[in-house]
Length: 116
Length: 117
Image (cartoon, rainbow over all chains, first blue to last red; front, side, top):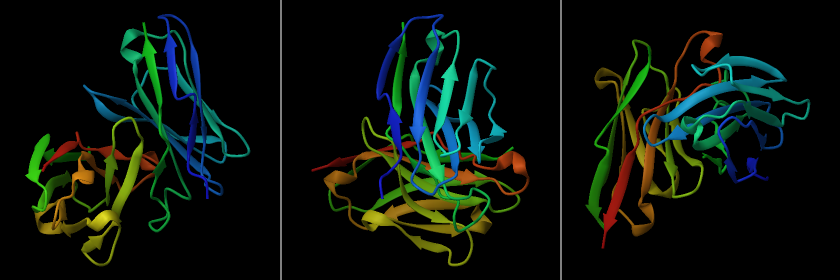
């Protein structure tokens, strides 16, 4: 079974621009979670989608948004980029986050975003 | 709020020595617990998880972890370190209770494991 894929792997953007990152979960997984990883703040939860609905959201400004499509693929968007948005953005998929035997999350390789 | 503490941001061991990476969580109700490993320029790979049942959990690559409720700990061990174990290790929890926690892993700050020849 193919793992979680993320595109693009690397991005360089300028302050003020917007960016869209894509995540394709493992086949059959309906939940996609997004995380931001930085040296200073570590791994922080952005949001989680399940069956095209955002069920949970972390403590990030409204510039960070996402969506999920009917095939479970997910995108996240960051508008009006700031230097501090430079990070590794990871997505993870799982079968069912609320089921103890199915809640492990499998991560993609990440998208490295650099804002200049 | 739930939190995870990993004691020691850097751990150095010799090849063949015991690996011990410490993790403590704060929760009155034991959460679901995970250990992940991250190699440079890669995503996170699941090593093992604890939900319920047996408190000693075996994972991939010879790693295991023991859940100790009385100590609120979930330390990761490996009897004999290999050079390929050098990476960053993250302990994580999924808090129990409420839809507001769904799909949300709370991570520790990570421990970088160095393996010396």
